[in-house]
Image (tube, rainbow, N blue to C red; front, side):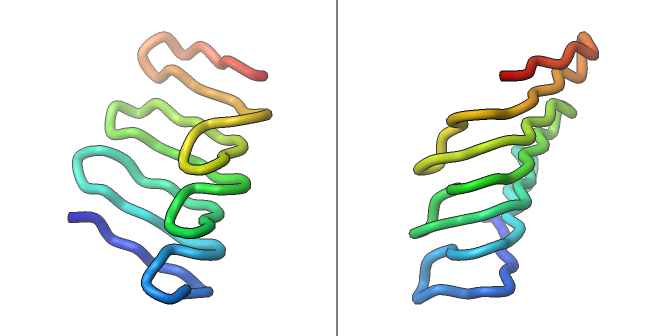
Length: 77
């Protein structure tokens, strides 16, 4: 079970800026719309990989930077 904190709670769904933590998987800090990652945000996986960029409907979309923690390689696009 994950956790959710937000400055702008919606009617039962994640909306606005917030922090979503799913233990043993990831932490995401950024924007939500209708319960999904939308806008800009930073996702940090438990393996140390990080994505900082744009989201649409819960999927990475648009401009962003990805750091592979194992290889220390940045991907930008």
